[in-house]
Image (cartoon, rainbow, N blue to C red; front, top):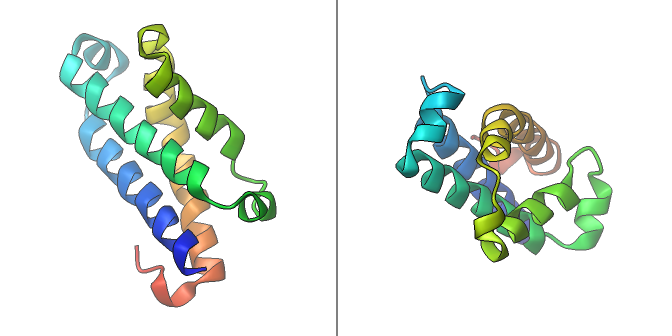
Amino acid sequence: MRRETLYLQDIIEACDLLHAFLEGMDASAFLASELHKAAALQKLAVIGEAAARLPQAFRETHPQVEWRDIIAFRNIAVHAYFAVQWDIVWATAHDDVPVLRRQVLEILQTENPEESET
């Protein structure tokens, strides 16, 4: 599971950075800040890219994670940038990313406990 572990660790790192970027912000402050919007979108794209690189069989083994939605979000962020809805970016980064981090950490702890010191 070495390759998968690297992608999962990339997801954890991006989640942690998103948390740091948004700490203390509310939705209106986020929506008013081009810097925070760009930073959040970039980390969400990293999460989506890492998820897309996980083998399909691996993703199917862990259906508790919304892999398809994560990858689709990345595709919109990268390929349809001007169609990005910033309120959805906020909700995703603020509400969904902490859940994703917990899910990915649980996968790491279950499947590879010796490398899950995150």
